[in-house]
Amino acid sequence: MRNTSRIMNIKVVCRKDARNSQGEVPLVIRFTHRRQTKTLSTGIIVNPAVWNEKSQRLTDYSPQYREMQLRLDSLLNEYHKKIRRLEALDIDVNFETLFEPAEERIDCTVDSYFRRVIEQLESIDKYGTASKYRVTCSLWHQFHPQKM
Image (cartoon, rainbow, N blue to C red; front, side, top):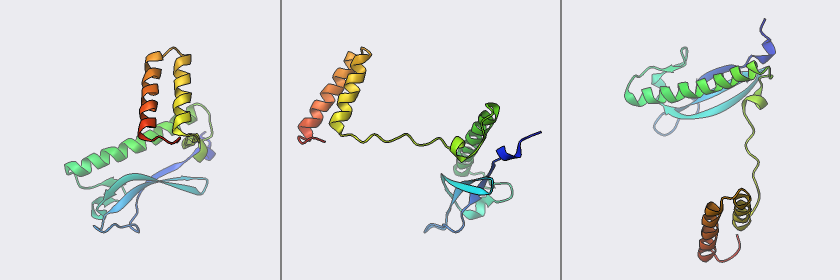
C-alpha cells in the first residue's frame, strides 16, 4: 500500500490573472503537498486560447507551440523523475527534498576569490590553469585598480 503522506500533486496552470500587454499568459507548475502549494515558473508564455486546462496541454501544433510543449513536458518529467528517485530511496517527498536548496552564496571580493581558486588549483597540481587565473587577476587589477 502506498503511503499517502508522500503524494505530491503536480499540475500545470495557465495564469490568466497575469496577462501581458499582448494578452499572453504564463504557464506555471503548481505543486501541492499536504494542502500546501508551491508555484514554479516555467518561463513559457502563451496565448490562453491555445491552452487546454483539462488535458494540461497546448492545443496548437505549430512549430513554436510544439517546442513550448516539449519544454513543458521536459520540466514535468524532470520533477516526476526526482519524485520517483526520492520514493525509491525511501525519502519523504516534500518541498524541501524536491527543491534542493540554492547553493550558499560566498561573500568575498573578486581578488580574494581569485586567490582562493589559484590556491585550490595549485594544491591539485593544475599550475597551467592557476597561471591563467593569475593573468586574469592581473588584468583585472589593471582594468580596475582599486581592490574589489
